[in-house]
Length: 551
Image 1 (cartoon, helix red, strand yellow):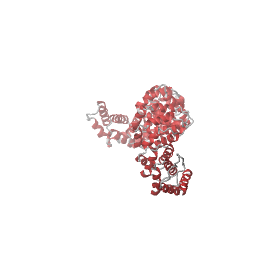
Image 2 (image 1 turned 135 degrees about the horizontal axis):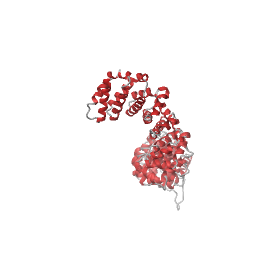
Image 3 (image 1 turned 90 degrees about the vertical axis):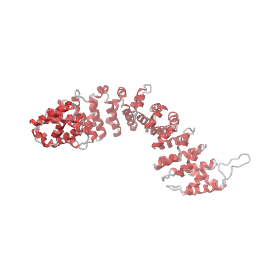
Image 4 (image 1 turned 60 degrees about the vertical axis):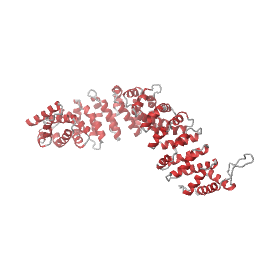
């Protein structure tokens, strides 16, 4: 501001441009009357030192006069004034305000470009969100993209900052790529000497990767290589942006396979190395990128072979909550690969699962239950019991606040484990005998078919082992309720498990007494005549009819 006021004072005192130079015997031309008046107005405006300046029509007219002047010194002054105002102006800008600024962006003078790009950057970064839309409407995008090729570091830095802000807008994301803005951004990200330029360029590219239609274009321009190379940069901001960008790229199957197959670039290895970063947000983004890469089986095995598990284990114990969630999600994907089971089933790794299943974060508990679901089978179920994992799972069953997603994962894991007799015995004894009634309650009150089916499977397994009649009695209404719901679902598996459960419940007098007065007998009778049902289910339905008619 002081520089602009000094310039204005000089203009008004001598009536000529302060940068007056001799050209032969000629001076620089004097100010035109309208230019003198514009300088005078802006000087009065800035002398007021308003904390939150407003651009009135009079002030804007003065800025336009200087912006559209043929003299570069006045253009510099207008750009400088814009940059000063933009740093403190909180009111939304209009297209009328942006138009003279766009004209300044198109100037060939470097000083004008510096201040004009800084002003746009301030308006879009620090002003209200509507400023981004207004900037796009004013046609500022193309000159900003052109200025990415400027040899001046300040202009590059400011222009990249503007593009980063504009790229938060969905329409602008695509327009930047269509107008070939990705190429200069990638060049600056890869080769810029100034770390500020590099950081802003990578930030802009990260925002572009959020749009699915952009990612293939970016990959063709060599973005994956640039992001991967910059994972080795010492700047943690650049590491963070690049890990996040690679995470977005890895959402697409095509790019995941490319990233996993680039052995000479070792993208998974570099991301694994970042799990030991001093910056927690870098570790978190590296986890998320590895999680997305681990959506493919080949990458799942590669990531474990390159030593990710010990580092993920450490983050699950010591990372911030966001990093723990990301690490848990990564482990869950890695557990899908059967070839990874020997490493994941080691005692030191199983020991962390009960803690995760008891975490306050629902997301961590969901990922832990999903991991158990992927790993457990009848052969290794006892190891999960010994590690305290079954107790931790059932703890979520008796927790009425558990989400539907968590209930789905927990019941699916327990249903697999319940195929083993020793597990069923443990379920009868644990949680003071509350597992069975809680399973009935969840199946009755949850409208999610998967949860109902999983609960029915566990309940059926417990009935195979045998449940005290005293336990069955209070739960008969709930049993009838969820069994009828499963029967009405029309799903063949749900119908089959309902019929199986009814056959198991036939030995309980307290259930038999209530069953005839429910809606189930008529529905089961109807199944015996339903031609579209598989023969084995029709046979089961007839067995239920016979069982309850003779008892």
